[in-house]
Length: 66
Image 1 (tube, rainbow, N blue to C red):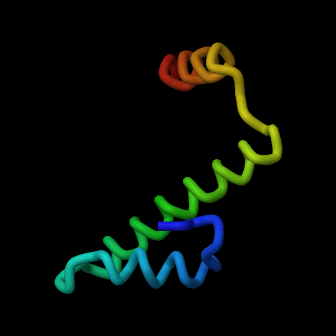
Image 2: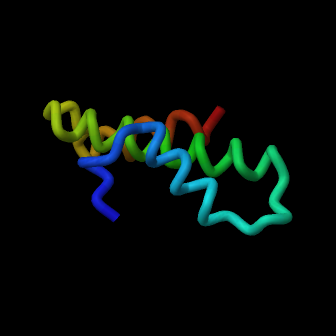
């Protein structure tokens, strides 16, 4: 799937179409949020906004120790 060339609406429609017919609205929303987060992360990477691996480990350690 060529995600870069698809509009966000097209990506949402394709995502929903790939789900089983008996899925719930909550499952649809979860899947769309999942893909929205991936899309946002990819956009940030393209803009050079990535976070160093060591910085992520420090943040996770502080979050998990609360």
